[in-house]
Length: 308
Figure 1: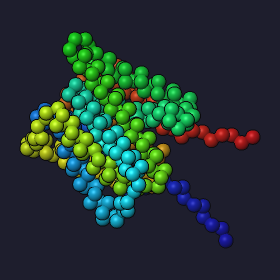
Figure 2: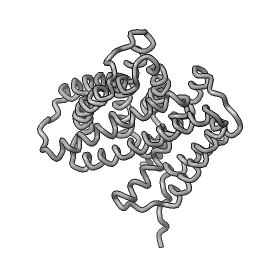
Figure 3: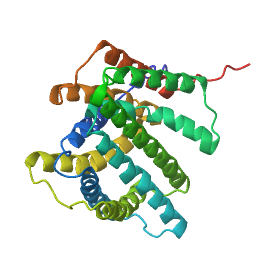
Figure 4: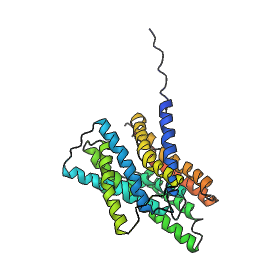
């Protein structure tokens, strides 16, 4: 009895496509939400409110799941490091950068995190750097330079753009360092959810301490646009998008899921063009294309070695 040939498995099922679109939408819009939190409330205070909201939601999730909560001191130190790198310092730098450059440009700089991860993996874990990663890094760096070329028009505007660029690069480096800490935690078999709940919680006194040391006011902007953007970043972008991305990661694998980081800067820049009047030019368009090409080179799966 002849069996009918199996149908080819689709690249993405409808559920996968829905999760992909959801993550893309949430990540892309989180950058403009940061823009709407700047002005009345100091950036550090806004980061504090963001992760106070995110930590509360994350703990509810952990308790509902019934995750174990007993860990040795060494693991709590890892959670602390994760909180300092991934849920506080990097966001302070990004929020401060938002005072100088458009939110869409921040998303483009953040997208080269995949390149920085490759180089940090070589430094810390002695992972070999492939030529495609090196080529992708150089292409992405060239693209970022082209995108900022119109911003460096001289005078105060150029100095402000340079400051925003440096802050974003520092924030991305901090984020990538947090990824290394997260990798060490995952290698110990600790669940991502409970690790993030502890990390966000440990970040809160650090953020509050910075606010006290700087003499900042713990105030809230009660305007609808600020509260909406705060809930969007603290609840939606920090927790719901994380759940959707982890689910997508488990369904289609890290390689394909990572392509969200290629598309989200494009969407974020379109949003920035619409809401922040971001001005396009030929250098910025070519730069965006180079950054995307660099990301694709880094994220592309290596070719399997040929059998002898």
